[in-house]
Length: 244
Image 1: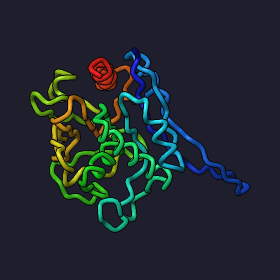
Image 2 (image 1 turned 120 degrees about the vertical axis):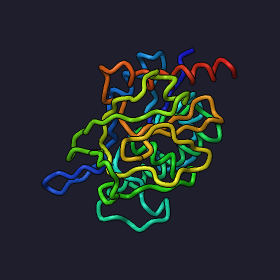
Image 3 (image 1 turned 60 degrees about the vertical axis):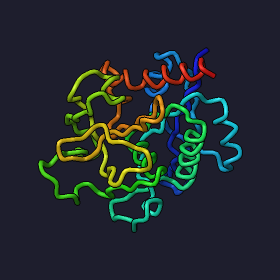
């Protein structure tokens, strides 16, 4: 049985020079490639306009990947908009939080990546730092190099889920984000930190597999340690299917 892994995707409005507009979905295909390699079946989750329709798509899933993207709308965690905030399209915002709630109700294995970990934290009642360059932390860590990836190490909590998966410490990661976790959401435990003290991974220890990482493992397809994170989700989903 190959577990079906749902993967959230972007909903974007594209505008041509002549003013014509059309909506489109977008997803890094390497998410699908990683799920295939690990023995799963990727299922792209389109932002359905009706939550009832979305539930029908989610029903057969055995695991979920919350992918990256722009920013979580600041009103979701009770803060005024920051000038640097570029929120999701409202349709994706509504869809992603429906997916998060569904995964919690069903206790599905979850891997939340970059903005996905921020969504997961806010879904659990946590808050975000709206713009990390405003934080006067030492030492200074570059979390995004313009519109490209920066790189830095993260320190892992010994014995945590992420540490058990990669079996190294510290772990070299890529980085492309300007927001980050502040107050952690309900039942989320920090398990990785950058040198400036920012939480870079969280997990829910009550669940067999509920992991969020601030970096982008899908963007490191040649790094076997990062690919282990994606494969571990599929393995957890298959184990859950076998138990049911």
